[in-house]
Image 1 (cartoon, one colour):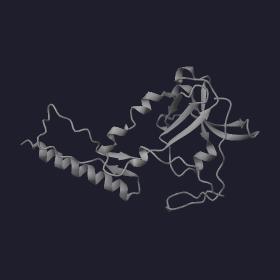
Image 2 (tube, helix red, strand yellow):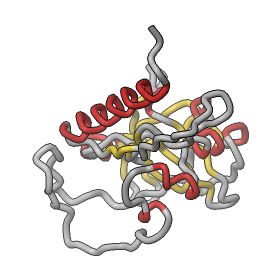
Image 3 (tube, one colour):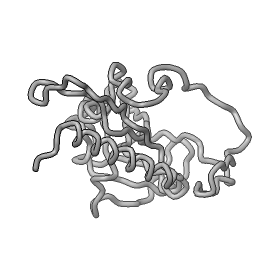
Image 4 (tube, one colour):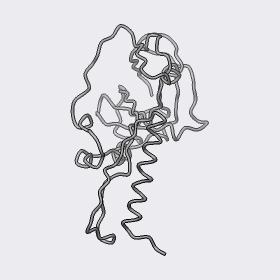
Length: 206
């Protein structure tokens, strides 16, 4: 016997709520999608464009003093992803590393989801500070065009589909806060940050 559309919708909403609450209980930043019941919904012609859920993902943004407009003309065969020391200390894993050209303002990105044995931890010279440091290096072939990431970002006019306050995704924030050290620890699962955090480093090669 086939379930009615309303029954299927109710069961689907319950499953979505349960998944979000389970992840929240585990301590992860997820939100409910807005649950809407359309009393005159036509399953053939209509579509209710609200997400089941939404999640906060971390993006790391790095400037490069290089000229490029996309993955194809990135001028080096490899990409410096991040200092290995920073990778060891971060309490979260970025979904994407974004590389912005200071020359063209174009940007490309890669994701650790693609990481394989060709990504290498190696030692490079920090030309700004004049010392060697560990660096995770990836082949250029893993760079993706900006549009592939933009396609997964929620545009402002669809934020209303998330059930909650989303104003911080529209405006505000971005201010610089000055502290002597970064030792804030508000959750016991966050790793110790008592050591002084490394400053921003700029590299002249890819």
